[in-house]
Image (cartoon, rainbow, N blue to C red; front, side):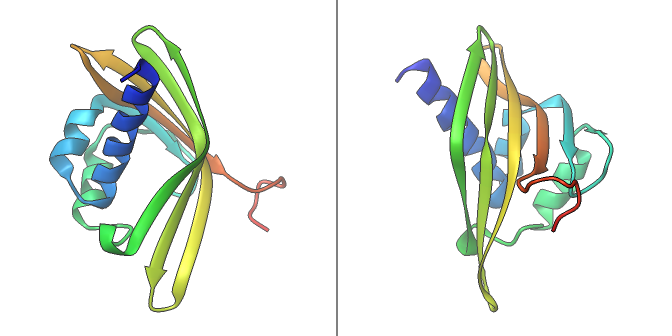
Length: 135
């Protein structure tokens, strides 16, 4: 397996841990020094893992049975033990009201520590044209 495929496989496992509520995998694939911007949660940077542990443990997005995610237009930039993955994240959810899709643009910064990759920074932004507010 080449280095790029290794990183994408890692990232898919990391993301899947969120939707399967696998806190242990999320903990091992995420740096304790995590920083992130999630425009739909707060207009400020969030630091640390406690917020995400709470969301994962309480099934914020449903269950793996009623959703899937796809990474559209993925791009990977690797610089030694640091990598930047960017893509449009599409979440598809099945519910009583049918199928719904949500999209946002996302970048994740990964570092290799002691031979294992970890996500250390996440930046999410809306996937629609300006103005800043959703049409």
